[in-house]
Image 1: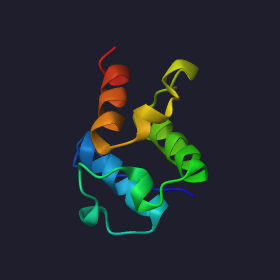
Image 2: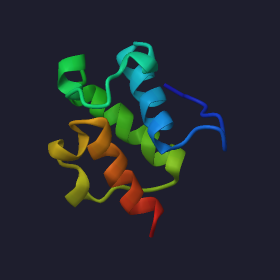
Image 3: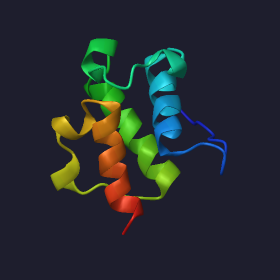
Image 4: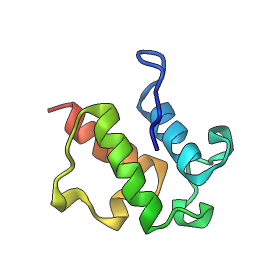
Length: 88
């Protein structure tokens, strides 16, 4: 799965929503920021695909210590972990 993000147009949260929408095959605007992603059908295969997309998009490599379920439970938790890497 290859996705192309609109460079310099989308912020971190929008990129997360866009990627999740594509992986879950749903409209990104229908994803509630407070929803548990597991309730939307986000599973282990989707998580792996999502991590690959995010690492490529933000040119980061998530450490094994950060590849924890709680870091990928909600939009906020995902945004927080990405912010950690892009602000280094």
